Length: 223
Length: 133
Image: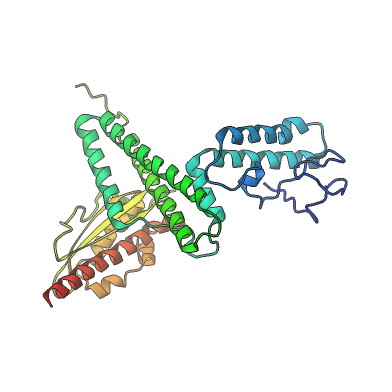
């Protein structure tokens, strides 16, 4: 997006300069207000920064914000407002897409709330034995797909993915449940554990993608 | 993005693909992963008592660059001492294979795998010596 909406004072309306009682809309001149690019996805949709969210609430917020910002509703207004509408609607879409998927949301959350500016960032390396397990799983799935057909291999892998996802969801709820003021080391260990769970799931999903491309019937074999 | 001829060559004719028994005393195993792309690379070294790498094998799940990087790494470490092998830098692999910037992490994976395998070997050896002492 080429436009930047840096305002001198974000607490004032960009149009009439009245002070804003809500961030989306000026109550005096009824102009929509730009969402800053530094605003996080949770705040954009008016949700608390948490790993577990109510999907129906998320959807409701998304619809409300879309009704407010969608460019279709601002077609007849001047250029500046159309720009704000386009910018805001895009951010609202992006926020909704990211937060709707629990695993995308967890990655985003760890990134947003994590210790920044560290060279290692949020990288949580899986221990070698787990990597070995992933490698062996992939090999055995490929053998299975080869010898008895892909259906069984997919079924086995889907079971693994379901288990991994259930474990991640559990870790997300656990991390939300940690009271404020808890020992930092403990908090970090929960975060690292969630990061590893997400990483493990990612590997399984990439095995799934590989298996799909591999087992797409390429030859017109007749048995 | 086009792969260089060298990457394609290693991809089509990977050198030293396979496994050693990881429990063997003279085998060091390094296994590393890159979750961004789902690559997993396993590199194994058979090291003699003089500290020379006699054989190397790899198994890699990943893109062409990851396979080529590990294949090249096994070629390079063979006949080298542990110390010499530790000198191999990912930038050497990048240069040799002419890897584009988006594939540099594949070469990092290969360097890490070499280091991991040597560490594993050293740990095994240390433990054995401790038991004997």
